[in-house]
Amino acid sequence: MNDFSELEAELKKLRPAPASAELTRRIECALAAPDEMPTAGVLPRPRERSTLWWSLGLGLTGLAALLVIGLTFFDQPPQSQGVASVTPKPAAAPGFQAVGLSQVVYSGRDEGLVFPPNDTGTLRRRLRYETRETMRWRNAQTGASVRVSYPVEQVVLTPVSFQ
Image (tube, rainbow, N blue to C red; front, top):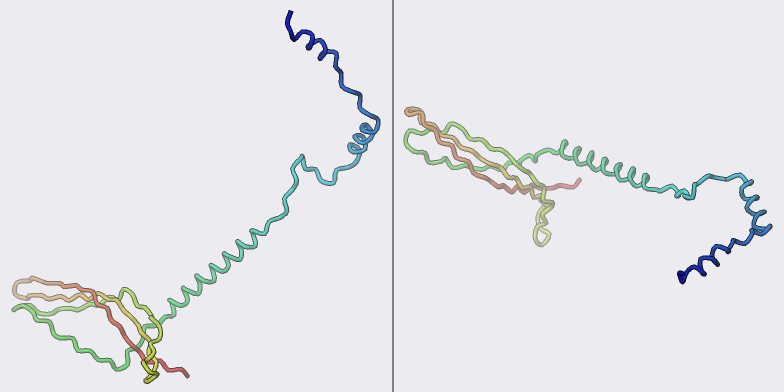
């Protein structure tokens, strides 16, 4: 015989205790009561406020984009006031004639106010321009042409008046 046969025989004789009358009554009352909200064991989460933050963030982003577009659209290049510059005539090889000069502005930055030392003089605004100048020469006899491009950085100080 098996050593566990006695144990198995005792386990087969075991039966669960009958439910008490109180337990049966509580189960019947719980089944008879209507459910306030069927959850299937899952409780609903409270509504999150993430939609509020998303709408606020998108609204502020749109406002900032419109502001940047508006500032760049209405930005006027500064008018130079009586600043004369003399560009030396480039020395050309014999037979070459200057036929063109082009200047392309790549960026213009407003670097803010410049305060004079010891509070003398007027306030000035520093503007920095980065351009590329291209000069072209042509020899009318041979038809040869030469083109030279170089970068130029120009800093302009314009007076500021507060009225």
